[in-house]
Length: 134
Image (cartoon, rainbow, N blue to C red; front, side):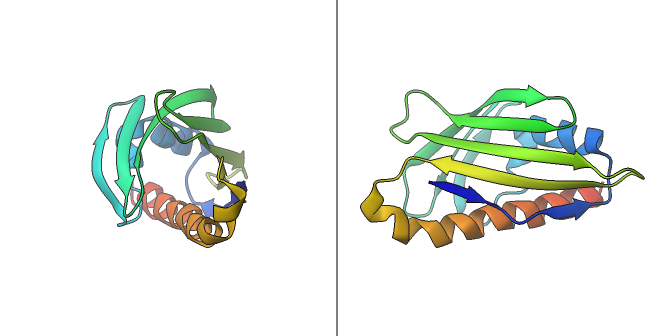
C-alpha cells in the first residue's frame, strides 16, 4: 500500500531541508506524539508507534537536495519504505512531500490507511515548522 502525504511549501532552501532530513537524529523532532521509545544515530533510528511493533529505519538512498529514502531494517517483520521528495522552488523555498510504501495484508489495509495518511501529513507539518524555525 502506498500513502502520499500532502505537499508543503517550506521557506528554506532545498539544500537545508535535505541536510536536515538526511540526519535521522533530526527525524525524531518531526514525528508525531504517538511515537515512543525513540533512539537514533545519523543513519539509523528505531521507535514504536502506539499499538504497533518496533520499527527500525535506515537511510537507504539519497539524491543530494532532492530525495531521501528510509527503509525498514532487514531484520524487522514489516516491509516499509519512507521516501521524502524535495522540489526546489527558487528564492530560498522548496516543496516537500513524503510517500510511505508498506506491505500490509489486504484485510488490514482499510484499518491502517487513514492512520498512515494522518501520520504522513503530520510529518510534513512538523518538518515545515522545524525547518522554518532554524
